[in-house]
Length: 292
Image 1 (cartoon, rainbow, N blue to C red):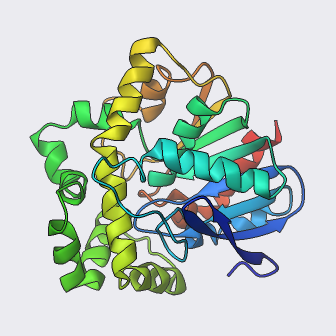
Image 2 (cartoon, rainbow, N blue to C red):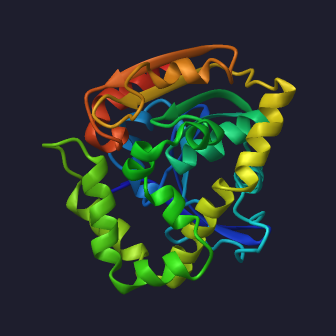
């Protein structure tokens, strides 16, 4: 995977970011989700690299990126903090303005970056999520069952860390199987990479800290912005999988129209992992959007 790409580890503040770079053209930052790493983009990267200079990091604390220590106030893993770290990473690589795509937790970092640093983000693609505040406000008993990992991972330490650590392979396989559309699968080498990272206690702790921030600081930041009427000014593309998304009454793009001035969407026949389950269609959607 990532043949022809360069791997670097770049210190940024309290983190050391593991990042793959490659391709030619305008800069495009790709952010993965939970429980993945930069490898989530392995199937689309060769196609996108024909037209874009790709920057594909492991989020702080995930994969081979070292993150800050989790803190009681959950500030260190707030999406605002992670977004600032990755803006600094892009500046270190020589990119002051860039396009951005984020899936799952990376999507939450991505829209926070677009809200907090509008001068940096020229275009934004969000893959298969709605805003954090909207998720929590809509969570009834059925959605709590379907998305049980949100309240579970946000429990105070060391409860989820201890339980995941007893059998990390079982836990991660269980989540992945729930989110992939029937008949689809992840590449074996990618699956092995995702499983392997959760054998590191530091990754388990960082990823739980990510979700604790999602139930505290991220909620507060979203609420402040919504109350103030703050919106994303860059064009926004919403790519989502018909086989996963929990909102059956309308597409997630309808929700995003309350947060961004210009919203388009592409729906794909897949589960949650759109870049791995439908790489050709996902790559085509991203290429067309970012080429505008």
